[in-house]
Length: 582
Image (tube, rainbow, N blue to C red):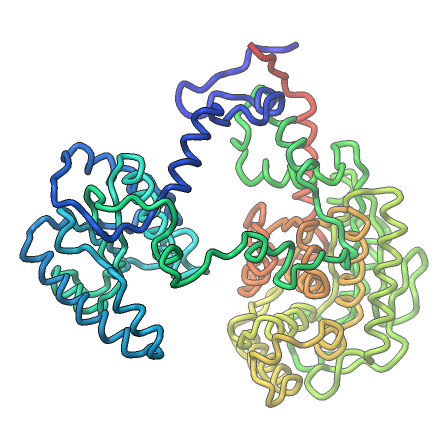
């Protein structure tokens, strides 16, 4: 049954259906567009002004236009100092006159004489001066967009100046931007405090010139560049980007189709928060509640256990793996309850090969990480490729893989790889693991520092960060990490979704993403474990975990719990009532 669409009383009242039926519905009328472009192209940098006043209401409209500019993180860092006092304007003009000569003296003689013939400011004659300032006295990390681009606040103020300039032109006023100042001298004149930047002086008033082309162009100072010479396509070299990636990404059409489908349901799109975002990601790649999922459980014993990094005997790996084969381990039971098939992979479990498993054992020697590399480089690549081949088999029967790990000592391996990939110390990337105590944790952290030191040597963290992922797999990883990285890479390449479990699977995912960053678009983080660097790994992948139960169990338990929740969400989307347009 269809229900009337709930229409919000505030904000955007349109629906996805309405927007898709008329994608240009936000466009202004042709006459309005002509006026806009006429104003934009008629903007000029005015240098000569009439001294006549103009209404305060006009000034308010112009400042309001500036205040309506876009600002990064809606920070609105601009402040507008309006100067009408003639003495202040005269002092500013004197500062500009001094700086004009200083700048002219830096030019060759021909340019110098030409510059001295130009009128570059109308500070004293324009009835109003406006100095736009940027208040930078805030913690940039608390402003969206400034943690990565620190100067984004300055760009926002530049946008405010452009708005102000266009509004002045629409009102018939002239505006001239004067930067012939030493920054500190202008700040001192206007008592601008430390930590607040100024953008020079804007002269505002009725123009005493009405140029049809830019003044410096008209006077032969420079020529306007042809638009073609300023536009580059795809990259700086102006060449087409070749499709070198083996990993497909969701297209804009796929993303929009999923969003449109959600908009047609009788609930507020996005109201399920992170769950909604994750359901969208699954839907991009064709997942549905009836989609069969496969838990790939990769088991491996690690020689690093000889250094006392675990509270358990290494034989536990084989015992739990055998229980999983009998569908009696907790991971296998949970997978069955979640409707997921279980595929067991032996990446190096002590003892004879177990029937009913995929084999991904190394053929060469395996080191303890402290004295020797984990794998021979050829083994690392061969096992990675086995993971890719298994992914190609799995995609034929499932769009979703749940990835789990099983192996005593594997958190030490994960910490060693994480330390190299992210430049972390042992203390930053080592947790207590399963039942470890404080002394063991400290010992593991020291061991990881020594492992990292052996591998990176004198390279330093910065150079180590650029190590080839296959080198890291061989030196600090192991067969399980190599296999999982290959499986993740291959399954992403087949347009599937991989739900990660804990620390080790996330480290393997980061290695795969270092080979091709588009891998991350196919990943779902089930949870955040107790290991301290797990969050840092997920942050590096751009993944937000669905829950934080402080799990430390492995076996894909977090991934299967997530899949149960996601299946419910996908099913709910199918069965939720639809709305009809009114």
